[in-house]
Image (tube, rainbow, N blue to C red; front, side, top):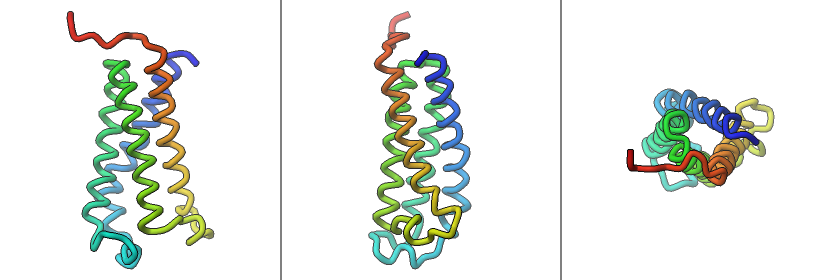
Length: 140
């Protein structure tokens, strides 16, 4: 796969994560039912909201870095993808797997979709990094 296609894919996916995660951290997560947290370590949604917001910010940084410094952006993409996938895994352990709990809700697909997006961003970042060009240099 060509470097331009990989970089473009990372930009699109990272921008999508940023544009959905950051607003959700402020608007969606705090409005979720408190009873979903009963089996987990949290008493409210403050930490999950901060974590989701952080994933969104990292994704935004990745989208910019992949355009301006592709080699560094590739590393950022790996981190973004792992962070997104990890967020979804933790969410499943805390609130449960939505597809089995709420199979009739369209939103129940969000966990596996965002997990897959996270894996895709990480894999694309790794592929771009392995291409090795352009090399990250600190000297002018």
